[in-house]
Image (tube, rainbow, N blue to C red; front, side):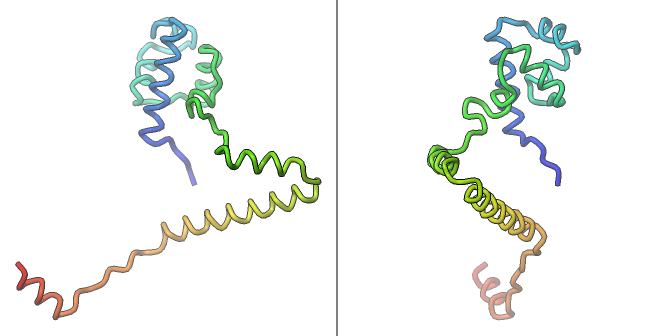
Length: 142
């Protein structure tokens, strides 16, 4: 299964690249020169019509002095929600065996979730046919 950035995620990346570039006081041409790409490519990144490769993303992050997580996910990064953080901190205090058990339970739940998603995608939707009586009532209503 291949994951790709959605249009909204691309636009967020584009917006953040633009904001960080301006914050650093760089022009598009200066950024292009530093990254070794044509200015057109920078314009595409900032317009959200193109996305950098992983290597390109690393170079952009280094140039703009930000993390790749900041570029991709914004201020929130990929941190878990606050209520989950507290649980993970508590798990960190468990013994190695207990931590292993917690990880197995989480892995099992994630697999179950992924299987359910895959099943939902492959299961055809059942379309109920109208009975002759329902068809007649629909015709009368028109």
